[in-house]
Amino acid sequence: MKATVLHSLNRIKRGLIVFVLLAICNPDILATVVHQDSYGIDYQLNYDTKEAQVIESWDKYDPHDIEPSGDIIIKDTINTINGGIFTVKYVGENAFADCKNITSVSLPKTIKSIEAKAFADCIGLTSITIPDSCHSIREHAFARCTGMKEIVIPNSVVNIERNAFWDCTLESVHITDLTSWCNIKFGNINSNPLFIGASLYLKGEKVIELIIPNSVTTINDFAFYGYSDLINITIPNSVTSINNYAFAKCTELTTVSMENSVRLIGEGCFSGCENLTNITLSNQLKHIEKAAFYFCERLRSIIIPSSVKGIDPLTFSGCSNLEYIKVGEDNAVYDSRGDCNAIIETNSNTLVRGCKSTIIPESVVNIGSAAFEGVLGLKKINIPQSVTSIGSSAFSNCSNLTNINLPNSLTEIQSSTFYYCQSLTDITIPENITNIGEYAFLNCNSLANIYCMSDLPPAIDNDYYCFDETIYSNARLWVPIGFKYQYQKANVWKNFDHISEHDMHSSSITEMNKTATTPTEIYDISGRPCTSMDKPGIYIIRMSDGSIRKIKK
Image (tube, rainbow, N blue to C red; front, top):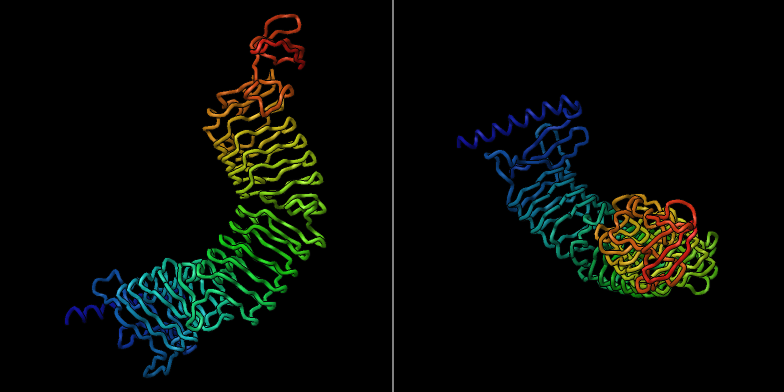
């Protein structure tokens, strides 16, 4: 009895101290008081609005405080002797956070919002009733509620904030209206309980073939993110926008039927839909955003409608089996000239996106940034002499690329151009290349021969991140006859353990490693022995195969 009284006095004392401090900082707090019901649940009462919210009822650091447990029933109204009736509208921030022994919660039909971390870490919670008056579930509201297996989301909910269901283990989500679900504003992937493996039930039936209602105009961000039970989607002519990551990671999705009203496919919209094989795009489509079909590994063909005005180069990154790309003939911005299986920006003659079967037309002047990024099925490609620039990351993550020729028209290899091309064994750097960007050949671990055609070593932007350290000892650097010394002194190039000279124009570059000879003796025009060919002039060179050559510098 004594301990109970002491505990009550401590709570009153603590509450008064907090109240005084809050009142000093915020005079408006004087309009609120704290009320405790018969179950030990604390409510903050606002005398101005006549509203109440459930607040944190226990101090887990106080050994005398009593943790809420068992079945929790939240009242709809609080009646006071002098203050009248207060309607309970909110479950406040941290109200029941870390109450591990709560098993169920019943919320009244007056609740408008479940605030941040209200039930976070309630690992014993198995059941909660969210009323159809609730419109918001704030961030981390149910984070790590690992005992909760199902939840009903009422039609009234319009906002579920970041990480609301983070690290939960839900198995089923129940709704009664698809239109309401599509209109929810999800904060991120962890705000959507479908992401964690839960199945979606519409009026008690599991959703496998999704038919979007005609009442939906926008499918919001993350609406069906990670819903692995979904196989087919039908999108009606009422929908104009499919927003960011709306169907991302729907790993069993195979077919999308889309009416001609859709104008926008958002960023990452179908990314990670690894079994998607069939999709017909709307003929009113205007924009396809970044990574919209990222790693749709079984997608083999795509037709870009004539209406499309903007395509991000990473739209089809990771689509390893994509082999047919066609742009509608009347498209004013893009084309697929000569059945090249690529998307080309017409006015600039820039190849924006290619696939594993792309043949680059000779009219192409530029290969855009990330144009072939992640084309895992690309093994070899010929770049015509018309190409004067290749953008950054153009061939990055083409992990099966073994053979590529670079035209003499290039003057620069930009950053990350061949990043993570793990199967690339040989590369010829044309003689007009003066600069190589950082990460250009990073993670190209199979490089065995690098042929530099220029007498002057190309400058390299980053000393440490152009080649892997192992390349310097494992690969052979081939340079023009008489210029080995320049490479041995040049930044980065000097790191190569194996540098060989060769007449770059005497035989096929691809046969160098078989037929190459190196200088054994160097003489000036007067016959005097020389250690190098640093100075301008004419030199007589005896090669390792016994042949004699004359070189002018």
